[in-house]
Length: 100
Image (spheres, helix red, strand yellow):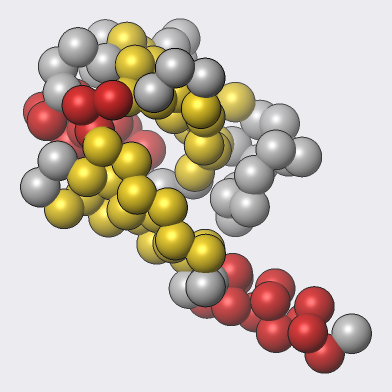
């Protein structure tokens, strides 16, 4: 029980999304994922609460490589998507975003 509580607290307080050069770094507590922004093909809105450790029900799903996806919930979704598009203008943006 203590392990589960510590894991949830780590995720709650230490979830970060950062863009370093051409890499999107996603950190959920002790879990770290790096995605090459050039490998991102699609970004779309989703509300599926069962797929990822994102802190919000309103999320963006990032598809990269051939069949990989990750869901995140940045505070300023529009700005975050624009920053990704600045690095890789070939990213297709799903419905609901005004930066198409």
